[in-house]
Image (tube, rainbow, N blue to C red; front, side, top):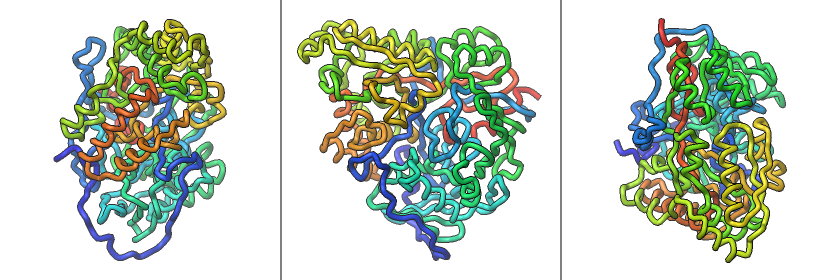
Length: 580
């Protein structure tokens, strides 16, 4: 099965419409720019993963190729963790911050999605192998380039007892599309003309123009389906108190603000029931506290393990540290080009002066690979070999060259200029990268000031322009939410959600539109390779390293995926006892 096609292209008739509720002509998010401007789903401080199978087919193709971490003494990629041997009364999971909300339209960062993925489900689903499979929709078909038809599973129950129907899907996607809601996923619907009920268990999406990205995002939080009645009943409290009224294997239990969120097994779940009766997510913002909780058994497991704790956890004998495919790149996000960074020579100089290898060793605990590419190599799995090679040919060397960088700064007349870099105590990866940028700037004649932001506030950098005031750069580990390089490269289109610096280039916009409209993978990846070269030439962000997903499990539990699929699939349902 070719891995380049992430959905079924077989044309089928929509069938007889038995109803007609719809959401139509939704405007894109109020971020300005081209009509096709979109935001890509990157989050945390920031950070991805992906889909690669035929929608509507139960059997998935193989996922992205595995990274070359196995060649590195610091880490080796694992396909998964051992399957659970039995059930549990409960398990506790450490997360680095408390989500501000669990409303699916605002699920933009690690903490929210790590929890929400077990409560709310989407039309399509990621698998642990980073492929896309049917979710709440049994199949998805497109009879023509402007139409996607989703046939829903019958008899799916919401947590409050109702039965899922096409009306709930129309309503749920409509909340994403309504600009008044300020949904984080709104721009992914910018090409949607209307979402219409065309049967009791059928929804049809009409596009304004062909969009290769939209159907892929239906496996992310963009495609979540919640109960219309439940959301309306909760009103402004939806996502913060009470039921989320979704369909997942867990339902929202007690939320102890500032401490933890408890999920309870949903016995009316349509799929395989969760192996644990409860899953408790505890908020531990201090990296040392998270590590100590894992070592002591206070927490049974966790993702986003502090990199400085890798060796300590490995040597502890308390459990096992696993690495899996993450499709993630660590970058310096350029948030402002109003000052010295407005000169591309300054951005190039900072990139050239950065000690990437030193960062991988000190910041990632050796578990990473230096890169000068904004996209990970694995994200190009579906591209023809020649196109895949062209995406990485002629990119700048990742090697440090301070003298050449210093000359660039002098030529730009930027010697002595001041820039501000945000940092946080989230983990060593963030703080070390900020320090590395500061050191690089000092070496070439710039003054880099560091601004420390609390972990719970760091997410605001991605959603609140006010939080980015006075900041020129911040560390961002970007994860792709689909197996397509356009997830990253579309960020630099005029008006795109994460185009914080306001970069605008007509040729880049036109090429982005062309790539997005291409259903033919060879043509789409070819256009994406051109975009990668443009983004690299302009140093729109500074790429630093590729980084695998890390997960620690103590001896009591097993069954969690090693890949970043956990952000959009009910991963906690598979976590159970390591031994009977």
